[in-house]
Length: 491
Picture 1 (cartoon, helix red, strand yellow):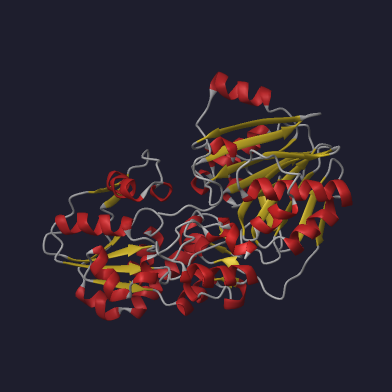
Picture 2 (tube, helix red, strand yellow):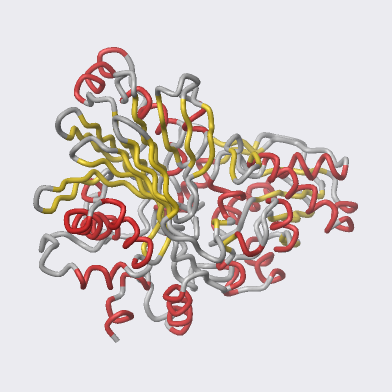
């Protein structure tokens, strides 16, 4: 299981409604995007901030009223985080967003989803302007870089400077100390950011996924375009495409794993794309399907694909793998020796008469192999004779530097082994990946619109490409994330 850097929600109410209600439910709908910490920032003559570790909690009654009374205002931003930057020894609260950054008379609230590739380079530019005791974290550097530029050059010029000089993935929400709400995406549009509004137009909102809008009864009105800035003041909404790239590079992994199935991405519901993944697997691997007796699916991100496979082939689909809903620890944020035990507790196998059966397990992806290995072992113990693993996401062979926590080569089972070897490593009788061309076709996008660097090794930004080459050379020598290694930038 993996972590991806964060979910965002922001809103302005033009009818004096308290924005906290929208922020709270917008985060609840996106809790899946960040289990490490959460935070709210509102504005009512001054900033009001609340952050904490863990999931956004279910609150009601007096507790909800206390939060609502403290987080007053008609405009605000909110954030859930899983960190892919920052030193492990620091408290998660040190990195909880939204952050507040200031320079001279300018003060901003800042929250973002993504990862900065050239953070050390930016840090070197800011030497003397950063607090000495602050550790390395791209969100701290990004926020300081942005507020310095706003103070010197104004908001739109500062955003354009970020788009031109910050390399990486970033969807940003910000709040100025005059109450203006702003948002922008990197020129490649690697991370999602959607806009919505109420039917009467009195509420404007932004959300990493459309489910954050849906839960608040808001209508999806479109995406913030790559390289576009949006500013929502008390009086109007201003949108401007500041930087236009020749291509886009939307993260392909959103479709397989991160996004909720009921989210709407680039013109399609995620569940329908995943169903098509399953149909593709059924067409590609007919010979394996003919040998099998039953389809199982990894809960919950592979269930739509399993349905598509069942629909295409007519093979029985048994939902005997179930996720313990209230085991909320995420395996990807744990040390390797903790990961297996967490997965073992998280997924339950009901007796489904698997004795002597030939089973197809549909999985969304295989990254390190721990989760799949544990589940395969459980199914084998339940009596399965043959186990074939169908994987919707193509084999991951390269690290990600754009906000997914797989930043070293050596942790990737797909880098170290081919398909036959992976099958042996996880205890399966065969592993069958969806080919990249099938995957891209199912999304409805083109290869030039998606980032597939973790599959192809072709990164959409220059520094990331150089990082991958350097990381491959030092794969077994240094397990730090390479974008946190100063020698890469200094030498």
